[in-house]
Each structure stands twice: as C-alpha cells, then as structure tokens.
Amino acid sequence: MRIDAEYSRFVPDSLRVEVGTEVRFVLMNGDPINHELIIGPESVHRRHATGTHKEHRPIPGELSVGPDEQGVTSYVFDEPGTVEMACHLPLHYEDGMRGEVEVVEPD
Amino acid sequence: MQRKTLAALAAIPCALAPQVADACGGLVGENGTIQLVRTTTLAAYSNGVERYVTAFQFTGEGESVGSIVPLPDVPTKVERGGDWTLQRLTQEVAPPEASASGEADQTTAASDVEIILETEIDALDITVLKGGGDEVGKWAIDNGFLLSPDAPEVLDFYAERSPVFMAAKFDAERARELGQGAGDSTPIMATIPTDDPWVPVRILGLGLEDDQRVEADVFLLTDQRPELLAGGPGLNVERSESASKGCSPISDRTRAWSGSATTCGCPTCSSTPQPKNSTTTSPCRPIRASSRRSRTPGCPKSQPCR
Image 1 (cartoon, chains in turn red, purple):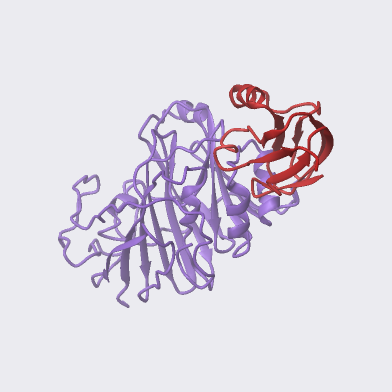
Image 2: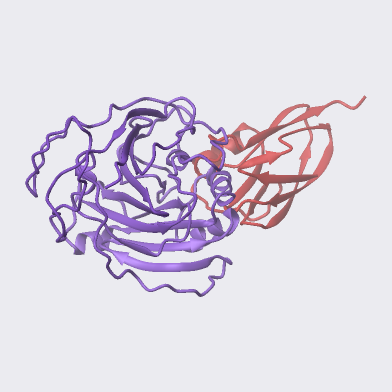
C-alpha cells in the first residue's frame, strides 16, 4: 500500500482492511522535511508522542523517511476496529499528519 | 518630489514568548516550534526598486534559531538597516547610503539551490538563495534549520511566485559575544530591483496553530496607492494616506545622511524634526487588529501583500 507524505499529510489518510491482513506500507516522502509513519494501538502512539527519538529503524509499524526518500514497513491487523497511523515528529500530528485504518471482518 | 503614499497595515495579534521576533519571515526554532511576538516591516518601492527593511529581535535564551523570508526578486544588497528606521516609520522613510554588502557566492549547494549572497550582520548569518520550495527546504534542513510541518506547502506557495529567499540564522552565542541582550534588535535592509514588488505576510503564520495569532505591522511606502487584496480576515489597512512633501534623508544614530532634516510621514504628525535618539511615540501608529492563521492559498501574484 503506497502512502504519500505530501505537505505533511498522508495521502490516502484512511484505509479499510480485513482482519488478519498483513499490509506492506510504502511511504513516499515528497516533502523536503522528515516524516515518520507509526501504526498501532493507542499505547504505541502515546509512547511516540512523548518520545524523543528523531528517527526509527524500520520495525513493524514504525518507519522514518528523510526528504524525497521512501521507506517500507509492514503491519498485521489482527483485531477488528480502528487503528491509527500518524507522524509524531514535533507538531506534525497536531498539524494533521494522521490517519486511520478500519479493520473489518471478512464478508 | 513626487508625493508618496504611506500605507500601514496591521495584521494578526500576539502569540507566545519569543526567542526571535522576525518581520515577514517564518521562524524556525530548535524543536520546530515557532515563537513570535510582534514584528515590523517597511517596504518602500520606487523606480523599480523595493527596499525591504525588517528587524530581527533577540528576546530569549535560545541557542540557534532562524528565519526564512521570501523575496520578490534577487537583492543587489543586504545590509544592516538604520537603528532608528523602523522606529520612525511613521515620520520618515529614506533610502540609505549605498554600502558594501557580503560578497556574492554563485556556487551551488548540495541541495541544488543557487547561493546568491552570504553575509554576516551582527549575530545574524544572512544567506540569499534561489530555488524551488523543495530545494530551499532541503537547504534549510542541511544548514541546521528546523522546518515546521506546514513549511513545505508555504515554501512552495512562495517559490511559485519568486524562487528567491533570504535565510537569517541567529546565533545566540555570537550575540552574547557582541554584547547583545534581550530586546536588542538587528535591522536588515534588502535592496531589490523588481518589476513585481510584494511583501510576504502569509509566512508569518509558519508553524502556528490555526487559532494562534501574529501581531505584525507592515508599512508600505509607494509612489502610487498600492492594491491590498491579500489575506482575508485579519489583514486590515489601518491607515493609507499621502506622505508629506519634502521627504528626504534624515539623521540616524549610526549613519550620516545627506539632505535636509525635514521629517516626512503622515500629515497628522508633527513637522518638527525629532532628536536622533528620540523615543517619542508617534501618533501615527497603526491599530492592532486580530485575526486567525489561515491555510488559504493567499492572494494572486499581482497583489503586493502575500
């Protein structure tokens, strides 16, 4: 799944996947500033919102990219509900760099 | 002498405790936050040359912060402005003596911008560069600036109108070595030959929340009444009137001027020349207006305030 970082926004910023799906995210950064993609439950976002790491190694659900760079991370959506994705670099989240993944039961 | 029009704009009111106050530039702090108190800018345009005077004021204990100011064209000079010019805006505006500025360096930086000019003015490292929004942003990052998340969009907005930017990086340690303290300001004047003069205003909101406010006074001195079509709510023309006759160079604390000592400015001001170090508050001060930052695209290219 390609996600563009464009003017400090995720494009697209909302997705829908079936529970149990592993999604490979490719974050394409078209901005001249750093961005990150953090996917996970509230506890993960709380940790990153108060954390001080300037970048993250590509572990599942966490990714940092520099200007004009791309990066890849994967995440398994194993429970139905809504999972947030966000950039927690200073002011990015507050400025609107966030989105959500709706995880639904298969038809 | 052709009667000039002096227009004063008041924009958007006060924000947080500052580290550096900058007129018409986007502040970039150490952790990406923007702190701005109030700003003052003069843009005088005549005979195809815009003279853009702004002040950078150190008011805190920060380490190194910077500002990026979009310019309508390539300046031929960037030099220290008169110490009292901005303080006496409502009384007189005069072109300074020509003086040498920093040498132009035409080398291309790794981020593919063209470096037009580099110079030091007090505790400020001034760089004039040319490039697209992305290129300027990358140069800023490479050179220690921290850009806020809205910077890419705002830089693109301005780069589409003019690829010229002036970056000013403030060095607090050098300021201490120079004996500068809180409240001291460094006025900068850029001399810009251009057929399309404008003054950046939108960039003042760089990094601010939507409900934060910036207090800025923008003075325009032009041969003809300018069109002010920018900004939407919060950008108000507080005064617009003809400058008095006989505007001529005046004395400044640091520079010697030629010509008469007649003051000029708004007709309601006293015509008595003010002492050099006068701190008398002029009656011609604009009224502050309030507004909210907006992410709207701003005004079309033909408008003088952007």
